[in-house]
Length: 92
Image (cartoon, rainbow, N blue to C red):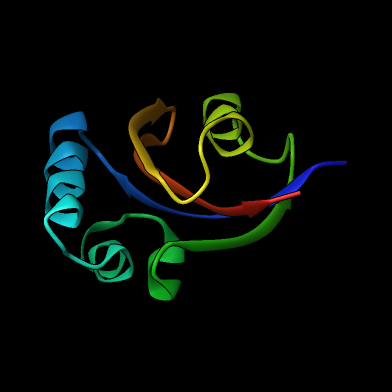
């Protein structure tokens, strides 16, 4: 079974997610942005979700983590929870 480690920032709007993504692109730290803006409890750990198996997350999230480029920040990705910026740290 495939596993991956990822971190994310969860916010309410696509606009806010894009604004945060732009700040990160200009040099802001992903972990600091997660602590400041994310609505997920993982914000305490800079958005780190740890390692998880394929199928444990909602499909849209899983698709990014298991199919898109590693270490790139993807999003905004819409799920029933809100809008995510997702960075896959590794997968195997």
